[in-house]
Length: 260
Ligand SMILES: C[S@@+](CC[C@H](N)C(=O)[O-])C[C@H]1O[C@@H](n2cnc3c(N)ncnc32)[C@H](O)[C@@H]1O
Image (cartoon, rainbow, N blue to C red; front, side):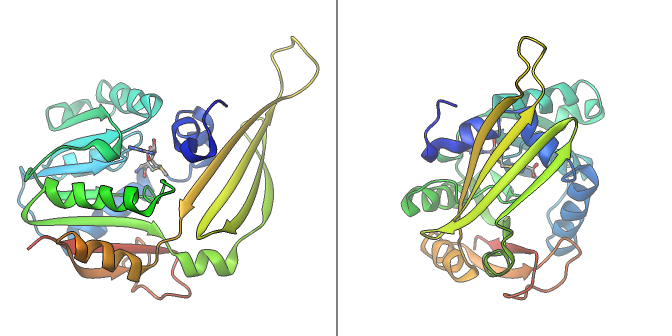
């Protein structure tokens, strides 16, 4: 891989391997989170929704099914291609309500446009510099209309630190995947090694090597970033079933914020 460790997200998410590794993060999982969102905010049909770091659009389509006009933005050309392919197939019925764009989340320029912005499934904290991560929150706040909502679904730092599995090996789709994890300097870092059989040109297996690195922001860190940027936290949840957020044990940190 030619990307440096600081730009790991450009290579890893641009692969089928990413979709294969996280295949349990499917449309059923997405529908649960979108239901949780609509049980807790009230925006009219025809509202504009920004799915920031939308991946292959698995949540975007459920927002469209709820009658929203959805813009999905993601840096990965591969995942946006998957989203656009689905627009011609499974998502066809909602084609007039969905558009997908390849763009860096640091470069969103929308102002006062959305009733709802979402950032789902740990799609934040990818940049080494805190200012760069906070810049994303600033852009989200600007992109929201007054009285708009922002929902972020992030990992729960405490639970992750307390239960970190240093490494595991799994076999899936004919590949062996080794994941090595550590916490360092406030980040969770993962090395992902994927071994697959070569296409007969050699007897040796082919190895692909990727990294993941996410800044471990806590609820209090988010509160500070949100307050600096004109967003008020109105609710938190610890899982997609709507259970309350408990710092030491919740799977997820799901935050609902409001722009006054
Ligand atoms: C963990 S995935 C989640 C994708 C999607 N929200 C989902 O739940 O399926 C993180 C996503 O962030 C995107 N991403 C990473 N860096 C980005 C950046 N700088 N700007 C925009 N999107 C980015 C990746 O391409 C990937 O689709």
